[in-house]
Image (cartoon, rainbow, N blue to C red; front, side, top):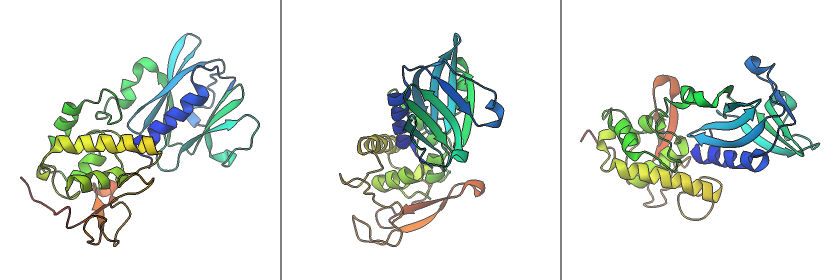
Length: 265
């Protein structure tokens, strides 16, 4: 699933193609929105909160928000009008056309339209957004430390604790912090620093255009998907295991030497 940096970059691309423009045609291939037509709407821009995309428009005097989520397979593409789509038409869920450009959302996991004033109903349950300029670190800390016995990796993947981290940055931030992802939250020596590292990693991902945590070479990571390979810092083979509740198990990675598993503090 795309993480906060990838979603932020998607919003930036959508802004380049849509912001300030009038929609000349729309097509919502989503059961609950099949009859919706936003032709003539002006797109004000696309924002994000964690992994959620919020495209804000004005149509017939009403301010509306198109809320989409990429989930595992979703992607937005900007396509020059008249050009062939890069994916099959049956995968399209949303088509937004302007003069010369089509924004097509393929295989989206969530598509809904709400009054912009009601955005809180769809994102209000989420934790502070690590990518936000006004990131509320104190609130994020409060949520993270609310359950000290909870496995750290499970807490960081919980978007109601802090929004934006997925499996890549979970593994990488825990490595850089020297924290075991399966150990309890209470074992983290400096949780504030952990959140700051996560925020910086996501920003680096935006700068490089992809997750890049181990140097300046694009795509270089410390532990993610490197099980059985040597740790880039100490040479110990990287290990992998599962984290999260039974219904949402995810694979994570760590160096057993650089990230010794600790007990409750």
